[in-house]
Length: 383
Image (cartoon, rainbow, N blue to C red; front, side, top):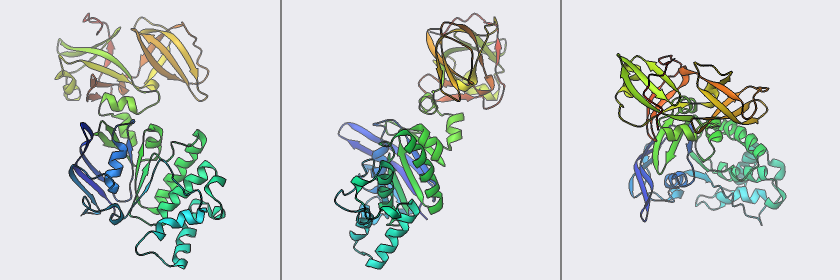
């Protein structure tokens, strides 16, 4: 078993808290991504698991064994850093063999060659063993760095933004190769990244980290469809979710959500109970760009002015100005709109969300039609 468990892990540097009471359960054989912007604590979390950063509080366990006080070499973990740090004066073979030669139980030459060649075959670099790093492409150097971890046959692999220095096309290819390799090996892999595309495309589960705090841990689809907070909604999704301020009231037993220029209504039942209970708080309505359609202006729909049209091949991102804010909608190729056009906004109400402003989620439509568009009830445009 190579599950990884963190309980109440905290790490501080002077007056700055890098990790703030982190609890995580990473399953054996799981591809687990930690997603967050720079300075969110991602690398500190990885270094704490490997043993390079001792926690100020909490415990780290691997395979049910408490390793909090063990040295990195005793944890049976391999880490691939963002800086590949290959030895420029050594061949690919010697770079791959280096971790084996540093072990107290160093294998014999035959076993060393077997492991090096097996790792090279797995990564498709067996023909490069006699070359030096300067003779390799970026992707080949990346494979050598991964190979140095493979030869040790560790229980857990840790990757610290390993693709960030590669060009866009190579990153796409390496994402697929890493996912295939992890499935083939069947080992636990913890992958740190600030690229939400990497996390969403590779992970079995995603952990969203912000200022050392875990905001959400769930499969990628759940994080996308049911973000736990406005922060998660913005960090996952390209373009990010549109957020519009709303005010709420109950009118004649019916819940009303007043957004800029339009009003929504729904029964104050169990599905919307969290929204009803949040009366008096500053709330926002969330809608993904793909859940907003650009249509001809109509009296019953919010009206906006087109600011920019961004053709992206398979889709078109349309930026509109609505109540002094930029709202983004995703349309199919060939959408016939131009800057300064007046358009209507049709929002898929079975896909909307309600959050506390800069806070937690209160409601996800998640395919239901609890809300309907109604005539303005006169509560005014929020803020």
